Length: 160
Image 1 (spheres, helix red, strand yellow):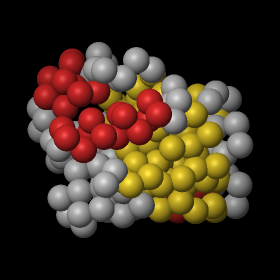
Image 2: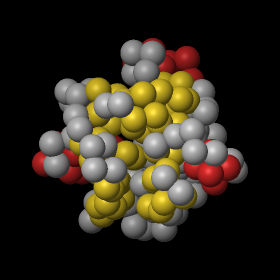
Image 3: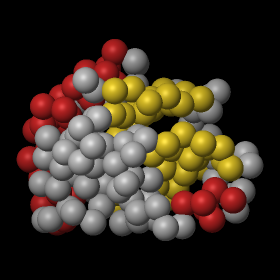
């Protein structure tokens, strides 16, 4: 199963459209969003993705009630732990406990955002992924990650 990982959309709908196009071109079946959509109107773009979706709230998400409503109750508080394609995944927004979670050995995949900087690394048998920022507002280098859950290989893809 191929998944798309994104974070820190910050209302940049143009870059979000590019991210969805990249996910569709890479046969992504499920998107994981690591927080900071910012506004509920991001769903205007996300609704065009026909696969699965799991997200968490970030520190800049405003109207959480409306966000979760338009995203059909698929946005959770952090940490959010779930299984997908036989992999145990935990999603965070802030990176504070990411290394401890990875070091614990309890998860196959630890995803986080917030820093706006892409990271792919291994901690023991756990893959840690930060897809960077979709918005591109902070560093001007918008990116997402695409990952194969069978092979546990991931890559960062630039939006521009």
